[in-house]
Structures are given as C-alpha cells and as structure tokens.
Image (cartoon, rainbow, N blue to C red; front, top):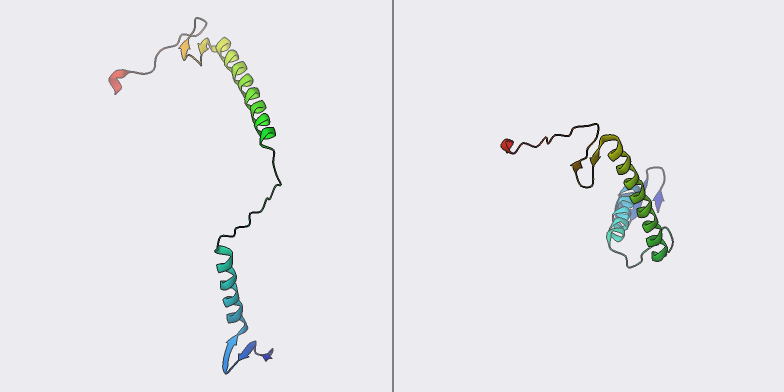
Length: 103
C-alpha cells in the first residue's frame, strides 16, 4: 500500500520512494523514445514536388532578373563589368590591386 504521509511505497518487504519509482519509469520511457520508430509523422502535410520545383524556378528567375538589373546599374555607375571582371571606359580609372611580387 501507499503511505501518503511519508511518500513511501511498500513493495514486498522493500521500500522505495515515489521519486525513485518515477525516475525508473522515466528511464524506461526515454529508452523507448530513443529507439528508432518505423512510424514517420508528416508535420506539414503532404507536398507536391512539381509545384515546389515550379515555385523554386520562379524565384530563381526573379533573382536572376534582379541580379542582371543591379549589374547593369553598377556597370553604368562605375564603368566596371562584374560578370567579366573587367573595367570599362568611363569616369573611373580602374587599377589592378593584385601584385604578383607579393606572393
């Protein structure tokens, strides 16, 4: 029986505290949780691969458009081609900062 006043549980001539029993139960539960379960849960529902690829392609296309636009604006403002990494004729004079003798 349980002696509620002292928080003890009698079990066949042995006495264990309630906390000892709960710790043992917790250990058993953790062992069960750590074992790999064959069940997989879908937290966000099913997905359609084709629609995701379509959305990704749309975002990629938009990003490429913005990148080309910003490269064009940079080219006009600083007379430098970022894609070819070469200076262009214009207001700025570009010099090579790399010095092979520093190697």
